[in-house]
Length: 273
Ligand SMILES: C[S@@+](CC[C@H](N)C(=O)[O-])C[C@H]1O[C@@H](n2cnc3c(N)ncnc32)[C@H](O)[C@@H]1O
Image 1 (cartoon, rainbow, N blue to C red):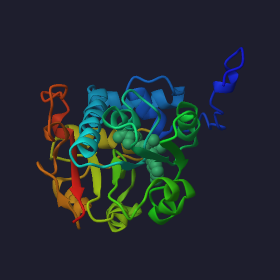
Image 2 (tube, helix red, strand yellow):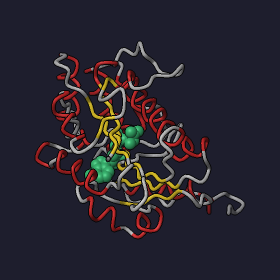
Image 3 (cartoon, protein in one colour):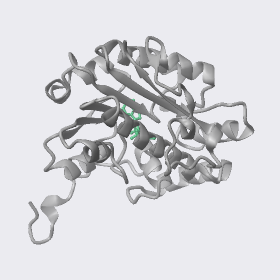
């Protein structure tokens, strides 16, 4: 617990190279968070120049994630969740969304960025159903072999893997389709996978924002077509309404269906038979 200065509660922040942006911190900045540095803000400025409504794009994704996690726990009966590329803690974290339906749901957060581990550990110190680990989705076997995953996710039972806003941070050379197939191969019958990605719907704004991601300092952020994103779901049955614009996936009264970034993001949930 905290000492007088609260220092015991402070996350041990890892060494950070202040000359290099981090995807997690840029995303945090775009979402209006507070865990970012000058270099992250510079990179973000290039994104806002390309598409001024870029924050809404991130919010559309978070909104889809909220609805999908609620659906997975409330309607599909999922009680264990592996969240890949989970990002820095933000408003409406996956475990809080799941626990609002059932506090016993187990959640393992996985991210490549040590700063996510540091902040996540501080947040989750007293939470016995949720943990955070370092991991790289380009090696799905290693993620599933991690002791925390092995102890918290019973892969003989149904579980859900979330890959929200992460595969677009893999270039084609890094084989996002192979990563998706590796995830699907790990799923037990009755399990689910969520994939969401920047959408190339043949719009000039998609091209402009992709260029800003790729050339603006971050070096990652690949917009993919409907056909490309359908490939993520090979071996899965798409849950209704299928792969759609993120805001068209089971919208509720908190979904910004008139979002200015409606056509820049696609999402879906697949079920392993
Ligand atoms: C845009 S954020 C998405 C956060 C969250 N999933 C969401 O949808 O709101 C992408 C996250 O993926 C992480 N990431 C990037 N490449 C990764 C990799 N190869 N393995 C694991 N995490 C990765 C980044 O550190 C970042 O936190």
